[in-house]
Length: 521
Image (tube, rainbow, N blue to C red):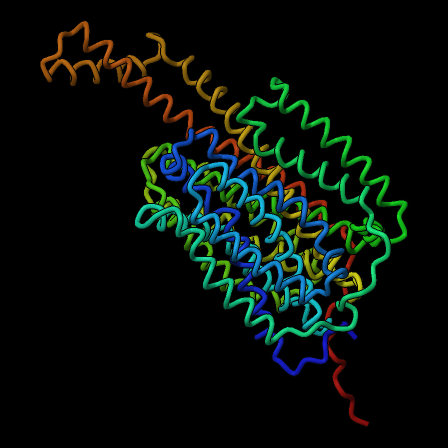
C-alpha cells in the first residue's frame, strides 16, 4: 500500500489541481527577473536596490522549503497546502499594489514564506495518489511543473512587462490561486499518514539554525557576484554565518528523535544519491535558463519578450517527452536514463559552440531545445528512484528535502556560472587583444577596410583611423562576450559528462519484468 487516501477521484484530477498551485509558485521564481528594471523605474529605486525583490523571495522561500514537511505534520498536509495557496495568493495581490520598494520587499518575503510549501506538498500528494508501479507517470506530471515553469517564466514575464504593467505578474496569481485552493479543497483527501498529528515541544533551536544558515546562504549566492564575493566584508560575514549555521544545524538535527528536518533519510542509498543528482538537475536547469536570455539581450539586441520566446519552444518539446519518460522508467533502470539525460544535456550545452555574431532566432531556438531534451530523463528517473523506498509517513519530509536540493542547486549553479562568465569574458578579451597588432594580417586588412569606408563618408583620414580602431574594438568586445557564454556552457557540459559517469554507480530500482510465455503441456 502506498498510503493513498481512500479517494474515488481520479489521481490525474488530483494531480492537475495540486500542480496548478505549484506551477504558479515555480513560475514566480523566474517571472520577476525580466521585470526588475521596470519595477525600479516605477518605484524610484536603483537597479541594485531592485534586486532585493528577488533576493527577499529566495531567502524566505529557501528557509521554509525544508520545514514544509514538519509543518504539514503539524497542520495536516491538505490544510497546510490550502493555507500556502491562499497565503501565496494574498501576498501576490499585496505585491501588486505595493507603492514603494521596501513595501514590495516585505510582501515578497511573505510570498516566499507562504509559497515555500507548494512544491514539496504537490510532489508528496501526487506520490501518494498513484500506486508504486505508476510512480514514473506521477513524476512526469510533477516534472511538467518543475521543468516547464522556469522555462516559461521569462517568456510570460517579458510579455506582461513589455505590453502591460509589472504589477500584473503578481495580480495574475489571484484568480489562479483561488481556483487552485477550491480544487484542492474539493478533490484532495489526506491519507492517514498525512493527517494532523500531535507534536510535542517545538524544536526552536533546529528551526533557528536552519533559518539562519539557509537565509545567509541565499544572500551570499544572490549577492556574491554583485558584491565581488570574498572581497566584500558583507559577503564574508554572511558566508561565515551560513557555514556556522548549517554545520550546527546538521549536528543538532542528526541527534534529535523528532527533528524538524529528518536528515536520517539520507542513510537510504536510493534517496541520498538521487538527492545529490537532483541538486545538479537544478544546477543545469536554472543556470542554462539564465544564460541564454542574458546572451541574446546583451549581444543580439533582443527585448524581454523575444528573449523569452527563445526559450518557449523548448518547453513545448519537454512537455511531449515527459509522458514518454514516465513510461520508460518502469522498464529501464533509472540510473541508465539519468546517465543518458546528462549526456543529452551536455551535447546541448556544447551546441552553443556553433553560435556566431550572425546567429539568427531559429538557431537559438534549436540550441535551447537541444539543451533541454535531457531534462525529462533526469527529473523523472531521479524522483522515481528517490521515492522508491520512502514510506508514506516520510513522503512530505522527503519531498521537502528534494525540493530544497533542487532549488539550492539552481542558486549555486547560477552563481558559479555567472562568475565563470565574467572571468571568461576577461580571458577571451585578453586573448583577442593579442591579435590587434600591425603584424596580424586580419587586423591590418580590417583596419584598412574600415578606414577607407569611413573616409569615403567625408571624415578626415586621421579621425577615420581612430574611428576604425574603435569599430574593430567594439567587434572584439562583442566576440569576447559570445565566446565567454560558450565557455560557460562548455563548463556546464563538462560537469554533466562527469555526472553521467557517476550516475552509473547509483542504486538500481524495481522495474517491470516481462511475463514468461505460457508453455503447452
